[in-house]
Image (cartoon, rainbow, N blue to C red):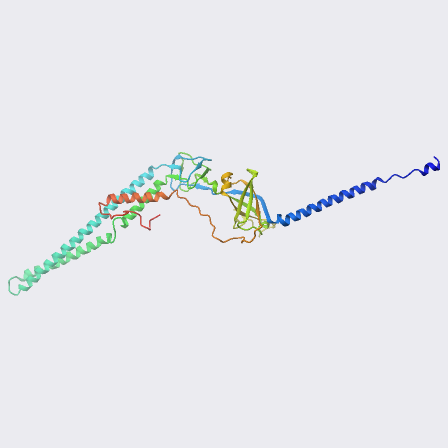
Length: 409
């Protein structure tokens, strides 16, 4: 190869320089993307994220109304089973009525006997009052006889012996009057200022009838609330005792959500703030709207059966969780029912932070039932009928035998 050929040969460009440029541009794009994402995340946190607190440690809670007998007895019928819906007042369990029926009949017969005994006391008191008047008249007659004899004793028309007999007759009449008055006072003390209906003996017997009637009525156990039956453990023929749990009724229209937030999440959570919830049962397609109803009085560990003893041994800090109760929309519950214990996803909107974190306003939920109300009225009516039937027309008009305010239930 000659010198002219060597002069035309050129050096090819370096490939490493081209790759370095590409890597530099790619790195710039990646860093820019990360910076953009960081800016977007910062903007989201500044305007949205810092106003929301969320947790998946949340579960549906509800009232589990236990059905327990108030008397001992043998089960002869069961009116509902697990998963059945029952209405308030519907009979769930029936106990054998034989023993309670005998006790009721005995109490009613004792009440009737007591009413007649009080009638007899009143009649005896009136009879003794008439006896007192008779003895008073006898005394007056004896005193008149004595006065006449003493006037004519000096004339000799009567002897001293007759005068002495007259004086003895006055003393005897006086003693008879005193005895009659004391007997009348003793009898009157048993019935004074009373009627048959409000006499203490009658009211005591009426209380026994009321107790026996309530025990008889309690052989049928009604549902206190409307809801679904759960945890039925009673069987036909089983002997049950007072206070024993037979089954439970859960009103699923009254459920709520207990969300367990970490203590660091609750600084800006307030009562009344809106909440969005989703249930694992329905997934994200169903979104519930709720509100913060209140906060638990302590963390879960504070109310544990065996609370932690941090003052002993080696201590490791554990982030505590506090239950927050979420109230749900009843209409949404009706459209998409929830069962107790289901898992929920909870997100609280904390934009409105004007309220107090712990409100002391009286917002307690009142729970009550009318399933047992009619029993007292029926017992009072039965007592009134027994008193009226045994008073012999002596009872006053009106609600004869109705319980006094002290006994009203």
